[in-house]
Image (cartoon, rainbow, N blue to C red):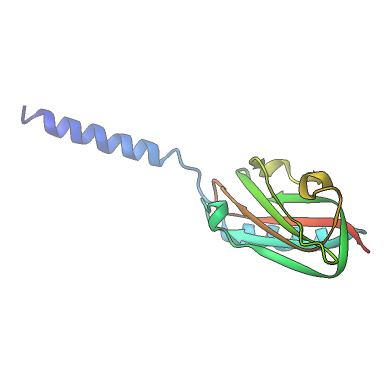
Length: 161
């Protein structure tokens, strides 16, 4: 019975080591920063882009705990859609919240299914973000539920009213 204990311990240690090897490595932080800067700048070049929101996040950030990035518009904006991009080979989930424009206090909330970052950019129709195509005065976004450290960029398309 005494000889069996070391065998059980060795089996447990080998299992932990094997499982640790299954977790994907985080990408190089310099590569994340370079992608983030380049993607944010190119997103701003779109003709009807009214806002670009971005974030850099560590692995495993829960959407509810993530850093919210927001923008307030000088005038109400009618959103025509958005593009979401995230860095790397992993997956990431996006949440977007809006507040209506010009006295409309209606708020909306959108949470995506996980996006495959390698397939970026992902197009989001306005109907996924807004209720009844209303104009908005502010927008807030966060990325999370990511399986690796990474970054995200949300380019919001629309027109000022």
